[in-house]
Length: 224
Image 1 (spheres, rainbow, N blue to C red):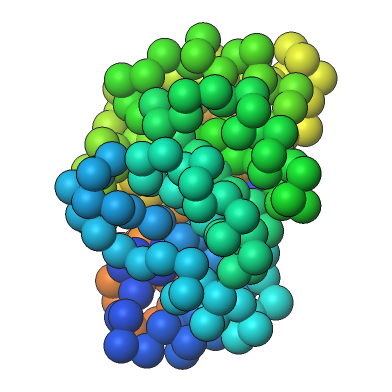
Image 2: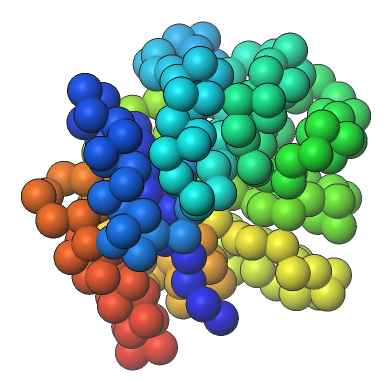
């Protein structure tokens, strides 16, 4: 199972986002992760569809737009039109999850569903055959630079079993505290998409950071 690396631009230098996105694309990233926060669903505020749209033609990589916002249904069309290839919504923020999934699909984007640490997996199990990505939050959302919650490893394992039992091929992503040290834990548990912010944008060499993260993920079979 090939591990995909998804740099989170939440940790990038906002004053030169075009350069930051190009650097990780040239460095071997597989997709770009946009953490969209509204100051309500989570306490922080980041960027909206205009920023995503402004950067869309600067990269060939897929854009995963992770909507950490209230009433995401109101903004689905705007983020797809802005260039979101994957639109990921939180089950906690969706009043009618199945309808939201259907709407994203009709707009022409792939569907991702995210779960906060405290949200049980059973809330999305009936939808696993209708989505393209399941994202397990391994921190409490709202801020970058948090510590990976090792208590989420069993949840990742259960998610992988559920996906495999259904015969699905959806991506299982993890988001929060991903580093060279924690990547093997997540991949060993069954994740195949690693969303990483500080681990990639925290240093000067984006290519080297991605290579180190990918190399550490590949050692999962030897990790304890």
